[in-house]
Image (cartoon, rainbow over all chains, first blue to last red; front, side, top):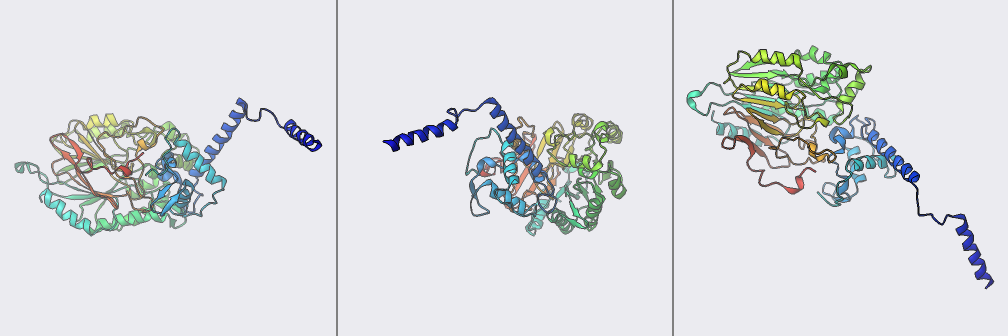
Length: 133
Length: 358
């Protein structure tokens, strides 16, 4: 009994250190998160137009104005030329390695996140259609 | 030569071609009514949008170089040999003297005489100084075997935008970014419009007229400068003529249209293809000519894909175009005299769903 009481005390103690309204967020939070997201989208546009992303000064927007024809909403999909189902990151890396003649990025590279944020933002409102060709 | 024969002999040539590039061959055959035969048959080739891009020193982007070299090589193999070759603008990517010189060197291998046209990528670094030193005037006209040809410089913008930059490379890079919101809409401008009026003043109205421009002389999508601001005014100047054909570069894709008496045709790029404007989902509506059936989506894994070449047969004074496309069925866009418009005779009904642009 003593042990149970102690456990209850410990649980109450834990609850005491966290808020009972942990799942709620304020407008201030929303504004902050949105601005963080928008910042990364803008960074993505910079990467998308950066002649130093690859090795040959070619930029992503040379072939994809406003990220058109990148189809982020269709991934993952079977990429017939790679012979398997891939995510958009793998296709981005293919572009960096080939038309841009550059080095592939780690998938956790912040520039990769930024690129995906930018091209997905340009497709805002388009239905998700994984697997679509 | 009969049109059929022309197509047949052209097909033979195509069969010997492994990779297509942007090349337009135009044939002026005899009139539909033999008694009206006024025009001697001849062909010319159209190469456009090479975008040669300097990396450093003598290093250039391989892919774009190969596109232009291929075009030059195939052009030299054409039979009959074209009377002349028109280059449709954007020889350079960032208007650098090194890029323009590099392009001039590759083009110098052509066996046929050259006619040059200015694109925005050739212009906005030094406002055309080096280009003009190499190639001469940016607008001019010439007669060839009964056809009147006009070359316009359609990539000018207002002086305020042109002169607001302290750094010419910043101006060039802004204009080079097709989707850069800080760009400015193209125009031919008042001076050239006056020149064009004068040039056409004494020309008989039945003379076949071919006008070359870099940007479309019609309004399609302002956001990517698939657009010429004074297009309507130019169309008015061309209105009195019976048979007017406008052929333009810049858009890196198949487009065709007819506005009044003018038929419009685009040519493809030797460097890379562009998506159709309506595939930019944030912009609606776009003004892609309603008649155009899109070309298939490009396969990025095949670097010459969707850079194609076209033969244009202006046999009856209207354009019939035969597109030779890699990895795709060839297409024909022919003028339907009954419907009085260009139509894609086969592809229109057998559209491949997976190739839709979206």
